[in-house]
Image (cartoon, rainbow, N blue to C red; front, side, top):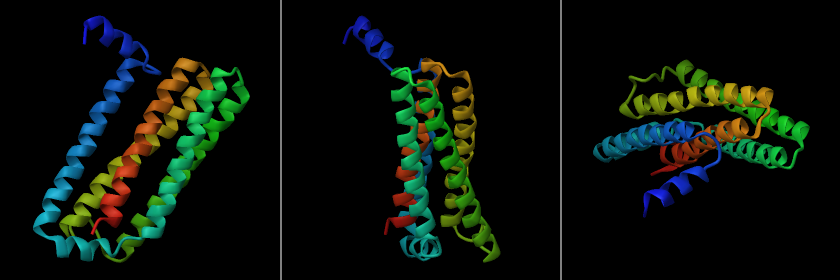
Amino acid sequence: MSEEDTQHRLADLPGDLMMWVLIVSELLVFGAGLAAFLAVRVGDTAGFTAAQDQLDRTAGGLNTAVLVTSGLAAALAVRWRRAGRRGKARGALAVAALLGCVFVWVKALEYQAKMAAGIGSETHPFFTFYYLLTGFHSAHVVAGIVILGLVAWRDRLDTMETGTAFWHMVDLVWVLLFPIIYLLR
């Protein structure tokens, strides 16, 4: 592939190139965390399965539905902004951000229940990874909520594309975390 083809392909990315650099680097960090989780799990499959049984799969599934729906709202925001429907685009970003808040609330309830049961990050290596990976992801959700608010306020197509690209990365990471942490046997 020629340099001109590469530049053309990069120019076709929605949003800002530096956001894509950030997204790829974040995906690599989460990928490394998941790889470490899976590597440690191999040495203690029974312990990881027993620890995993203490998770609230309903809450994890609800959070998956919440984030996927928020991703749809963010995608619709960009579509509507491209069509010149600024009010609808802002409303869709507000819905996406509100659903992000729901995600954080459900995750906080999960953490509270674990802590009340005496389950902390040092209880078992599974929970070390659980808190590390889901906590790091939750921090990204909070950052994404802020970003969605800023791009709704700024209301330009390029910033909206950039902000929603980050939000879709947050969605993607959860779609990978949920089955590996909550469901993998």
